[in-house]
Length: 114
Length: 113
Image 1: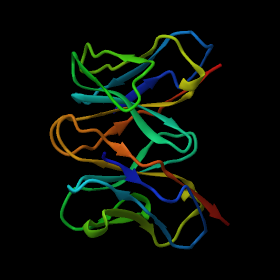
Image 2 (image 1 turned 90 degrees about the vertical axis):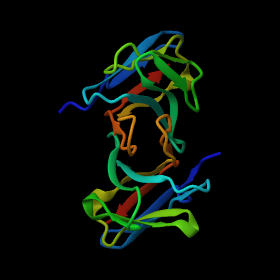
Image 3 (image 1 turned 90 degrees about the horizontal axis):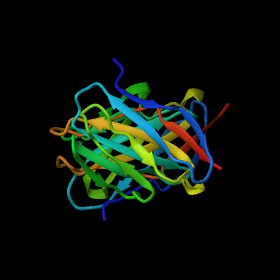
């Protein structure tokens, strides 16, 4: 079955430190890949997406993600975390087709220490 | 642009009551879907629709009904609410063809007592 794994349930980093959130997906074909962010009590905001081409994609708010086919991974990174980045982050995949559905990981909650 | 609009934002129900969560989009998207979000579970697909008159089940459809009479609207019905349906519900839509960028509503927070 198609699945998305976010191994880290909760991560705490200090403000100004670098961040990497992990995401791995199952299935052989390369899916379309997404990262969403959800601030407390808010809806989902698309951070970035990967469809094809350059494996390093840039998103909003200074985030980037790298697709590694050999590792079936799409990790999210940020060089310097700000307190406002505290939120929950979701990785999602879509395998295509008109009836294809977006499959979400369980999320990683990010806390930022001052 | 309104995008995807969900109403209500908050709702409290008693066990056994029924209600309809509303979802409307103004982007002429063929595909619409409902997710529920529970702590530690991510977002799980309840039902989806690829066009008016066409609906299908997702991962967790039990206890929910949907219909799609127009392109714009995709209501989610709880016929007899249960405490296990306490959750945050998100509606999403996208174009049917092309790459799957889904647009999400702001969510409905439902508590069933």
